[in-house]
Length: 211
Image (cartoon, rainbow, N blue to C red; front, side, top):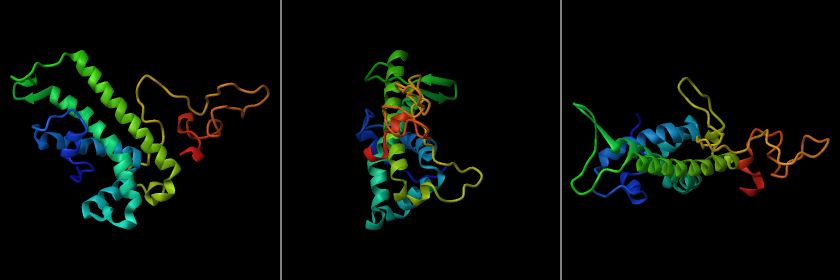
């Protein structure tokens, strides 16, 4: 697994409920796994590797790479923070010990019940998916700013960028087959916008002029 992180452990603590006394090595796995799975899926392997290279060399701060820096700061990091937090909730709920899985407990507090855990997990996941949708929408309408997004050869083990909605819950959003009020005798009327009918993009992306 690549050890270049798109957010720091300190940034994850700052913008979540994770306490400052949590050791950074406990969070590193959550960050690396979340970005390698969730962020790579959205960016595609080519753009994902480009971002990691710019972060590794420090070149992402150069004026010529301002588009990539904005992509990282404004779109990638908010999604990654919440994806990492959601994964951390699982890792801190239980620990894999020599005797098996055990639930964490502390002398300073009481362990939460499973219903509360589910609520926190669902809330973190919803926030991550919302930020991920903003990231995907930005990449679709501003793909020209990032040549690696649509270009390059994909070899074995590499992913193309995912353009579908990031929401994976039971709540679904209308897609290309959705028609709010179909006009009589017409298959092309949709009051929700130009991208709704006959488009590969679902309704929730909106129109390119509204991005």
